[in-house]
Length: 132
Image 1: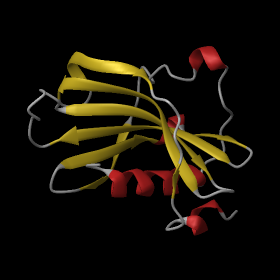
Image 2: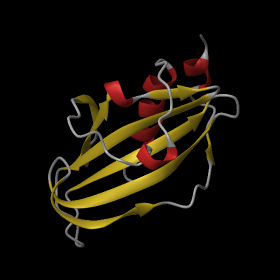
Image 3: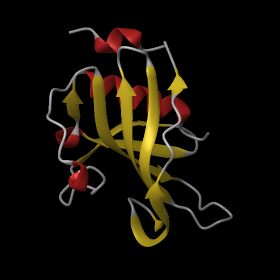
Image 4: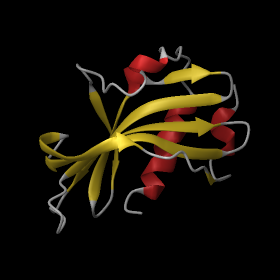
């Protein structure tokens, strides 16, 4: 996966925030006035997170992440917007919702959007991020 290392890094930031989880009807609604802060960059993409949208509930952290690709993929993908969840107690993460866009910074046409079946992926690389 293109931005797996950045996904994990984003989760580190999520662990530091204390926000309430919204009702289920609002969980997957991207923030209308997101203030994307650049988290980092790879050869393939810039990775951004909306710090104001980070939520905490027990050991879980949820956040919005945007990947802005430097080159358009063969399928026309230039950016993606994801709602992620990180489990601090079990050191794992999953994508809950994602949209793929034809233009940078989640602009242009939506090529795909929807709920992702929540398969967890284990990681212990950033276990320290959940310490309070």
